[in-house]
Length: 141
Image 1 (spheres, rainbow, N blue to C red):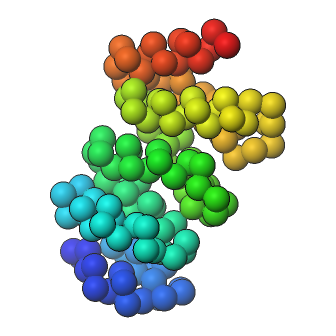
Image 2 (image 1 turned 135 degrees about the vertical axis):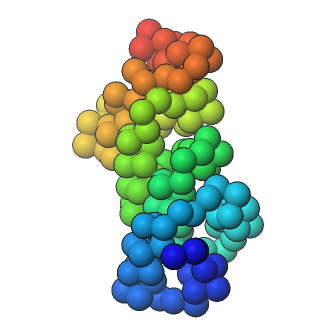
């Protein structure tokens, strides 16, 4: 099923959630969804933002990962939860994502109950030399 932006914008509640679950089963490409997300994210309510980040999580692309990483310190718990769980599932992260992860870990360094604690093993999964350097600096603190 191709992703229908008009449907995503018009549905609410359980109907919206069910639509996103179905849409995620199809092939949504970064080039199809990311420009829409970037243009509309600021205006989205938290529920729609949470679901949109969930869509980005199933899109395999570095730009999607970079976008998701921007939300790991979002004020809404559910948005933050989806962003953190999405980053945590990545096999390896590049320098852009690593900066967000390390910043969050440092911000919550003394609180292992914070959601950011879920990111604690991400610095060990670097995708490039720059990310490795960022992770190394983090581990040396």
